[in-house]
Each structure stands twice: as structure tokens, then as C-alpha cells.
Image (tube, rainbow, N blue to C red):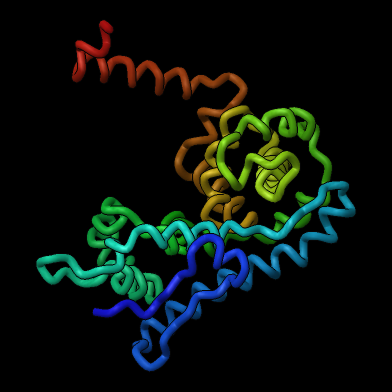
Length: 266
């Protein structure tokens, strides 16, 4: 199957944020998938425009996010994800396209298949769509609260600012002081500190949020982070006592001792 989606190189994409589709070769499923990807880009643009004034009023400069573009361009180097295997295996992009286009039905009927696909790796361009779907954050009501959190003030702002520069300091998206990446990271961390006042802000959680921001806009990253913290027990590791973290470290140490004794005594 010939590829119908062409993603520009990083430099070309920065100049022309476009995903080119050859309509003469595209199937209805591929057209529907393209529409979803384009809609994700529109959401990011609308996200930047609608929240820019809010951020300015709260004293924070919010620059438009390129996180979805980072996701798309990072997929340009993974051509093996888009090509058929030697054994005739179907194009991975096409499979994920069908899964995303009919998520509710596919997830209910083919849960084991989706788990297998995820374990093989979600292609970069799909992560901003698939990750929220996997944790049911795509329709989370907390996204509607995000704008209000951005306007509010958090007691954790000073310490969040202090740690921002230490989070992925060598990554292009985050290394610029007060740049778009650092500002997005600050916004999401501040929003969570207001959303979950028991946990507030804990150093280290920014690396989780930063990873999400590499793939999706702020509101989506916030919603996924809330899901990870609340539904997957991660918040217990970031509570002030850090009792759950201590338990996890104890379990890890004992597993290493049992399974890799040479490493344990090293």
C-alpha cells in the first residue's frame, strides 16, 4: 500500500504546518483519519488563541503550542511504521487509523488486540489522539476547568517556576527560558496544584507532564495527567508523606534482589 500521508521535514513543517493528502488515492477511512489529525491541529490553534488573553490577564505569557506538530514531525523518521512488513503485514498507520475512527466499538470488541498494538508502540503522530483515548481523558470534564485554573493563583507558583528549567533542559521544546514549552509546563503544573490541593505540586511530576506536552496541547495533557494521578494511583507517590513511593522503592529493591542478585550486590 502506498502512503498517502506526507509529513514535511522539521524545517518545512515549521514554515508550513500542513499534512498533505493525495485525495485521488485516499480511502474514506484515510480521509476520516486526516480530518481527525487536522482537527487536532485546529484545536491547538484555537487553544492558543482563546487562552492567550486569559494568560495575559493572569500575568503569564502563553505562546501557541507546537506540541502536535512535534508529534507529527517526530513521525517522519519512522517510515518503518508506515510500510508493510515483509510478510505482508498491513500498514500500521492504516490499522491505527481504523482503530481511532471507531474507537468505542473497537475498544469494546477487540481490547486484547488494542493492548497488543499499544505494546508494540503507538506511532508518534497518533499519540496525541490515542493516549487520551486509552485513559478516557478525551471527554474528561476537567478540561473545561483548565481555563479557570489558568486565571487563578496558586501558592505553588514560585517553586514550580524554580523547577521548570530543570525539566528536560536539553529538549528543544523546553530549553528556552520562558519559552513556549516552559510556559505550557508551568500552566499545567499550576493547574494541577489547584485541582488537587492535597498533592499540590511535587518535584518530579513535571517530567510526566513534559512528556505529555511533547505529544498534545495543554488541556489534553492536563486531562491525561489528572487521569494518571487519580485513576492509576500515581498521586499516592506524590503525596507529602511519599509513603507509596517508599513502598514502590522497597518492592523494586526486593525484585532486583530476587531476580538480578548480581546487580543488587553491585
